[in-house]
Length: 446
Ligand SMILES: C[C@H](O)[C@@H](O)CC(=O)C(=O)O
Ligand SMILES: [Mg+2]
Image 1 (cartoon, rainbow, N blue to C red):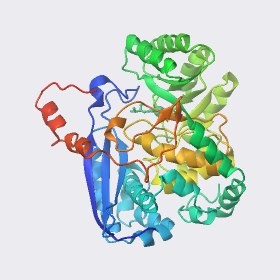
Image 2: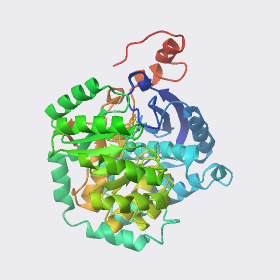
Image 3: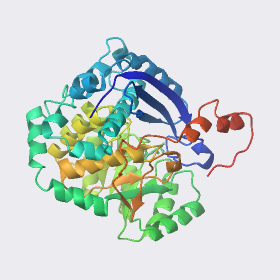
Image 4: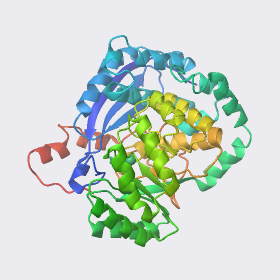
């Protein structure tokens, strides 16, 4: 049972120096330090439970998101958990509609990342209080309760609450069987870990050989900085994985619209399934033009990891601008806004292939995609969830991958809690890892 009044909200700036090993590097982000604005909420309930939430950042700027979390905290502290979750849609709207703070959004940028971190903590706490992993909490909710978590403002021209209800009711058929199937087989994943842009050929070959041995069949490679290098790397990886495994490309917004079409056409011989983020994430019509031009080559457009909110997703769907929709558990306004996007994707019949990786994104988004399969989409066709093999050791309940599939988490909560030792050591700038780095010491990192 949900219980307690929120008595405290603390937020910290936790950064991992991943740029030292070029992990996570791409054509626009050559030196990311995978980081998080990490939120902990406490209540006056005598159960010892806390809610943990985060949003993902790339290092610098995390302090801005931390400020935004603090600015929003007045809407959270002293709130009753029962009051929040019994009208979650209202609470979501309260956080996103602060009459002064919305001016620095609305529902985008640092303030929306902060909303995500806070709400992720609330969902974690709710699931823990119910003694269920988050995906199961969602699966066990009836359609009305699920809908009461969603703010439909600005999307009713694409999806009404009545239509969303119908989708959820229709998906009740076969739900139990799909849950069983997930528990035994898990949700299919693909890996991005072999081919970050800053990795050498030798590293790429080594990682790819190991991934193939571990049973991976779907691979994503970073492109976009240099065409000849892309051709070289795509050839290398295609030769390694063979003609039958799946290859995806990710340009991280590097190109103009026309340039994207020309560049990807030159990579078509490597038979990529999709080109991800070919251009600005805000350019809905640009994505539509790229989609139309690449469709005859059998290449789809994927995007979403930097889509600010449900309105951008709505327009991408309405404009037939994407073939694969990539929700992000920490950029959209937590589970609440992701539910809206999952339902829109179902209505427009576009497969959802979530963005994961970063720090903690795999831990969180697995819950959403499991729920999507069991209670909304009912399909695995053309669907897979990203996996990146970094930083899981810092989480108390890390993801479990078996045969290249996410196995449903069994621990209560949203898998958001980090180990205390990790948050202490990697706190920026006072944690011991950063103190050593900032004073010029070399450190050994896994
Ligand atoms: C900067 C991040 O590592 C980004 O490259 C991640 C990404 O685009 C993906 O995982 O997809
Ligand atoms: Mg990407």
